[in-house]
Amino acid sequence: MNNTIDDIKIHIACATDDGFAYPLAVMIVSVLENHKNQKVCIHLFSALLSENNKSKIEQLVKKYNQSFIFYRLNPLDFKAFPTSDRISSAAYYRLLMPGKIDKKAKRFLYLDADIIVINNLTPLFDLNMGETIFGAIHDVVAIDWKLHKKHNIPEQYLYFNSGVLLINREKWENINATQKLQNILFQIIIFANIMTKTV
Image 1 (cartoon, rainbow, N blue to C red):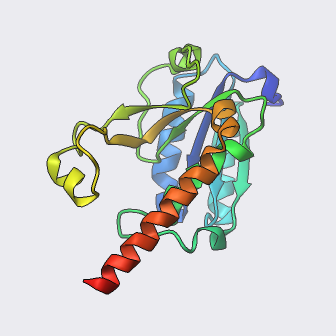
Image 2: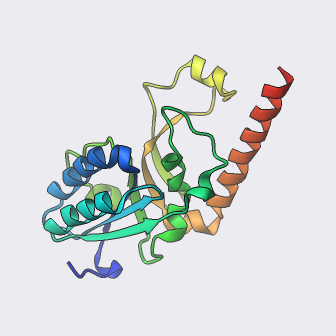
Image 3: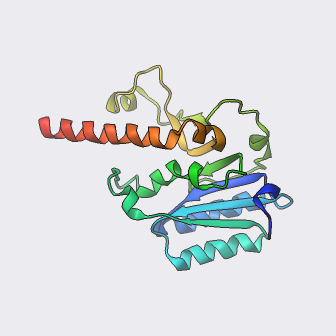
């Protein structure tokens, strides 16, 4: 489909490496199946996705006659960020998304690879976000006092699910949120290293 950004309302951003390529494909199909009569653009970000898997995902999107944009990231840009068996470097790709997606896309919905969409997402793109930078859902499963204690989160602050984020791209860019979040992240890393060495 030769849609221009101006023609498209539903912008879906996602990130993966080869380990999550198959679940990501399932998530994308769930989006496209619920938007057969609307123009959708899938924005895929990766530093480590093979060309073979990238091509398969692109062909999948094209089968639905929808738009696909791939953003190849530099893995070295994420080398300093902490990872674990549950969190890969791909978790940090979403920090760069607002600055890379075309400015004509006023907002986009970030979805983790393990999400299944069961309905049309248009109402989210019709929401009046005002000055809100992003919309997220309170993580009612993960949020408990142990999690707050472990990460030194004051009890009045809510822990949200970062796997579904409605990003107000323009507002995000206006306050330079990417740089601010990266600064906070690096402060946490430095603090964690100091605590590790002093314990």
